[in-house]
Length: 314
Image (spheres, one colour):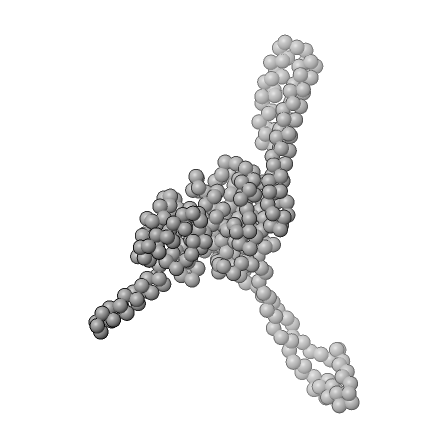
C-alpha cells in the first residue's frame, strides 16, 4: 500500500467520526468521500505536473545528446534519471580520456529534490559536459556526493541500470582440435588432387568448447588511492580545460590557476596547488587523490641541474 494512502487512513477515520456527530452516517460518509476525492485529485495533479516537468526539461537538451526520454549522452559522460527518484552520472566507457570509469548517484539521501536536480542538469548539459563538471554543479552546497571508481573490464558493476552502456567482456574460445581420422585426411588429399574437396562431417572429431568469463564483483569498485599516476592529472602540465574537470573547480578558476602558474612557475607540491585553488574544504581530499606533480617536479629538477652545470662550466 502506498505510504501516502496509509497516512490518510487515521485522519479519515477521525474526520468521519467528527462529521457523524453533526450529520447522519450517510451524509457524513458522502462528505468524507468528497474530501478524499479532492485530496486524491490534488495528489494526482501534483504527480502529473512533476512528470511533465521531467519530460519537458529534456527538451532543452540538443537532440543529438538525447539517448531516450530519461538518458543524456555525450562523448564524456552519461546521465540517466530513474522513476524512483534517482540519477546516475557515469563516465562514457567509449571515451579514451580515462582508463578508469567513475560514477556517482543522486538520490533522496544526498539531495532534497531529485526531479529539480534532473531539470537543472538538463539546462546545463551540452557536448562539453564532464562528470566532474556535474559533480561540482550538483555538490556545490551539500558536499555529500561520493564518486565510485569502476573496473572497465567487468560487465557487472556497482551501479544498477547502466549495464547497457558498458562494453561486454571478450569471450575467448579455444581453437577447434585438429582432425585425427587418417582415412578422412587421405580421402581429402585424394579429392583435392582431382580438383574437388569432399568432407565427411560424420567422421570429424572435435573437442568440446568451454568458455569462461571471470566476474569478481568484489573487485569492481576500487578506492581513489588505488589510481595510478597515469590516471592522475599533473597540475603543472595540464591546461585549463583539464584542470576544470577537478571537483569544485570551474573553467574560470582553472584559467586563473594557469595564469598564476605561468607567472610564478610550477607548483612545488599538491598542497601548494590546493592553497592557490581556494576550493571548499570538502573537495580537498577528492582533489588530492586525483592530482600529481611528480612528473613536472622531475622536469624542474632536471632543468635546475642543467643550469647548475652551465654555471660551473662558466
